[in-house]
Image 1 (cartoon, rainbow, N blue to C red):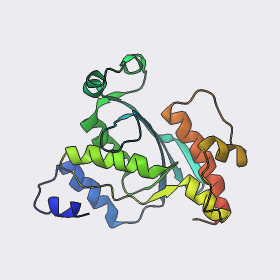
Image 2: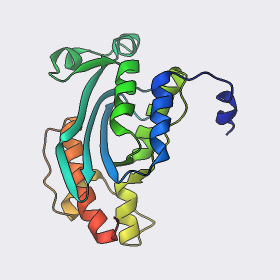
Image 3: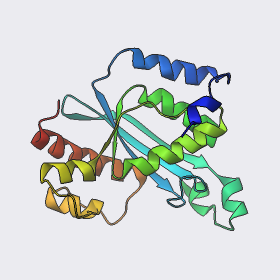
Length: 198
């Protein structure tokens, strides 16, 4: 609850100060975020890969994307897990600190969009905390909450595949973080339009 007190006198890295300065102006850019993670424990689990696409003015910008595999060898070793997918991945591979710094430069002050985005944001905040940074300042938008608000549903949860089926977004058997981010971007555009968001 008093996390902000820990950061009052702390000297933050330069890239964090640069990130914070981007919030002086409101962005009209959305970044649809998907992650592959080792689990859902926001304190103990780690991100294995990021997949992101930008959405501006109701358009998905394929060229404005972010894809990276995080080198989490220590976590995998300590937990007796295989690192085979990291070795085989054709994506850019970065250590956690470098990946977080690059991710912050990519997202800037954009609104973050995702499915159950709160979990991704908290895992990212845990990683940023290890780097003497604060918490993400980006506004989050959750696809499931958008759907529930549209239909005034409070007592039911929906999987991402259920939402995609409801809104006729194609579902793939094989999903990387980027493929999932693209699918979520299509879903976001449909929900955004129906909710009348700018």
